[in-house]
Amino acid sequence: MIAMLDFSVSINSLRSRHWQKKFGLDDERKAKSLPLSVKDDLPKLDSPADGVDPTKYLSIVGSCLHLAQVSRPDISYAIGVLSRHSRAPGSAHYQAALDLISYLYSTRFWSIQYTRTSDGSGNNPKVIERSWHPNDDATSDPVSDPKSRTIEERLVPSTPDVVPNVPNLYIDANLGGDRVTRKSTSGLIITMNGGPISWSSRLQKLCAQSSAEAEIYAVVDGVKEALHIRLLCEESGIRTPGIPMTVWEDNQACIQMGHNLRGSLSAKHYQLRLRFLNEHIWEKNIEFAKIDTKDQLSDGFTKPLPLPAFRLFRESVMVNLDPRITSN
Figure 1 (cartoon, rainbow, N blue to C red):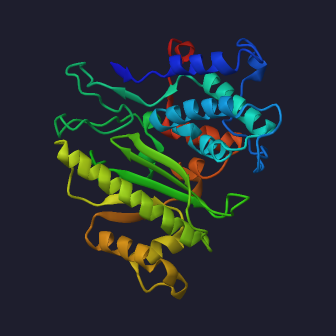
Figure 2 (figure 1 turned 120 degrees about the vertical axis):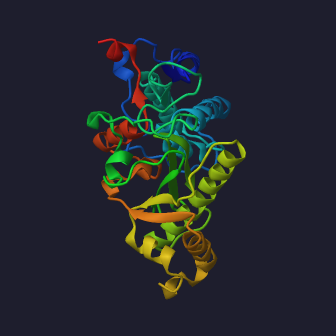
């Protein structure tokens, strides 16, 4: 049995309010395949452009922001970029917001999916991609079909079993991604028991001077979030094994500095952040693991991806429950 938090009704309502009046609901030629195009140029303006209603723009951004935080991690980067222009939107920004609604409507059946135990007993949801629910028997078998395995399972070494109730962090950063401030964008997704439980796409507060520094800023914020989630699970009575949480990182310099406080003289201005990581590594709360950039789940939270890469990213964190597909 499948349990799904269905936001397709909210997306239908959003599209009806803002899209139908201008373009029409049934015009499939307007459907978008990306939440934010790589070619979109969204300059920063000092005041709203003529003919653009800032109130309506804020309404679209606010509605999409709610979806991004609750059930649509695939639009996190796009809505983060659009929200930076809330004070002074232009025609390009408003069109990009409408394109985002079009993308949401065309992908309204993409969801984070959970299911119950195989025999349908109990009310405990279980992520179907892998692993077990906290109240399942410890000897339960995970999903064994290789085609149903997620990218996370393929990265875990084949010898140890996949351990339930342990958060896994995928963290990335895009150095100087913002064209105006030249600040970097941090991308984070935390998975547990096979599904994403927390994600974010945020502009960093400081200007990083290297890719390793930008990655360190992102990792520190991600580890803080994961430690909070682990504490919340323990206080909620969810059994968590006493093993380190894995931080999947694609920057080798970041990994080396995280293990060695004296690794770089150029890191003097963020030594406190490195000390924070060092202590949690020594205390075996976290451990770094190298991952290829093409397999980094958080890459889609740091920059706009071309269509092939974006589809791979979306399929790694979500599932399509379109009845026209699942019924066949």
